[in-house]
Length: 411
Image (cartoon, rainbow, N blue to C red; front, side):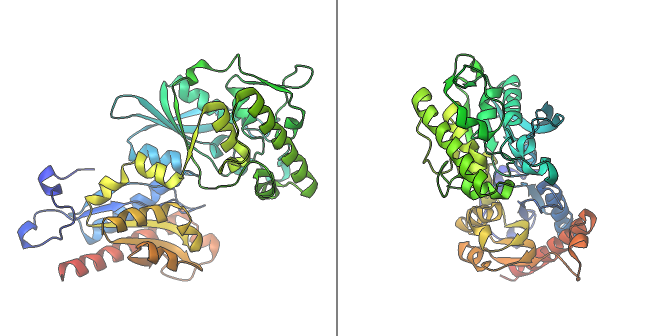
C-alpha cells in the first residue's frame, strides 16, 4: 500500500475539488469475513479490485476486520503486517490426532512482540465431526499449546479471541498445558474434560510456566454470560455442543466446583463475572490462571489495527459481511466499523449478501447505505462459492464507488 504524503493528510474530511485534484481519493476497506465463503483478507482484495476499476487513482487502505472470533488472526496479521506461524497442538477431542493451528505475531511501536491467536483454531467446535462430539470430555489443551508457542516467540502481549468452542472445561485444559496441576483427592492429575472438574480437590501452581509473568493477556469477548447458573456456560452453550438437559446440569455443577476451588486456591472470584462463561468457561480460566482482561472484541481489534486513525484519513469506507441484521449491531465487526466511521462523519457503505430483520439498527448507528452483493438469483451453494462471491463482491464495490464518486463530485 502506498501512503500519501503528510501534506495530503492534513484535512482528511475534505472532498476532492479543483484545488486538490491531484490528491487521490482515500478509501478504507474494512470487511468482516463472509462466513463459509471468504476470509476478511479475501473479501478486502475483492473489494479493492472493484474500487480500482471505478477509480484507478484511489489510495486504498485494506484493513481486514474481525470481532475476536474466527478470522481474527488472519485479519490482524494482514493489518499489522505480521507473520503467521503454524504449530501442532492437541485437538479438542482427547483421542483424536494432533492438529495444526496458526497464530500471528508482530512488533509493536516499542519493539515488543505481540501475538494473536484464536481458541477456535485449536479447541473449536468446527474441528470435531458431529458424530464425535462429546462436550463432557472436550478440552482446551490445544489452546494452552498455542499460548505456550506464543511465549516461545517471546510475546509480551497476547490477544486471544474466544468463541466457537467445542469445550466446557472452564479453560482447565489450557491451564494444564501451561503447567498448572488440577488434582483429585488422591493427588492425581484430572483427565481432560469439563465433567472431570466435579472431582477437583486442589490446584497446584508450583509448575506454572514462569514466562507468563509480566505478559499482558487481552481477551476478545463479546458475551456477558457468567460461568455458572441458568445463564452460564453449560446452560446456554452446552446444548449447542451436544449436551442433553442432564449433562447440562452435571457440567454446571462441575464448573461451580471449579469456581469454588479457584477462589480458595488462587484467590480469584470468577463465578459471576460477565464473560466468564464465554467459550465454555474459557473466559473464566483466562482470568483466573493468566490474569486476562476481557474486553469487547470489536473495540480490542479496532485499537490493535488503529482503525480510528486510518478511517480519519479516508474519504469513504467500505465494509462487508454475509448477512446484515439486528444481531450485527450487537458487537459484530461491521457495527464497529460503522461506529468509528460515523463518529468521524466519513460515509460508510456495507456490501452484504443478505439483509434480515433489524438491519435498521445499523442505520441508527450511522451506516450510510447498503449495497447488495448478489446480482442474480442463486441457491445457497452457488452464493457461497468463493469464486462467485469474489466476482459479486467486486462488482458491488465498483458500483458503490461510482455512486460515491458521483455524489461527492456534485457537491
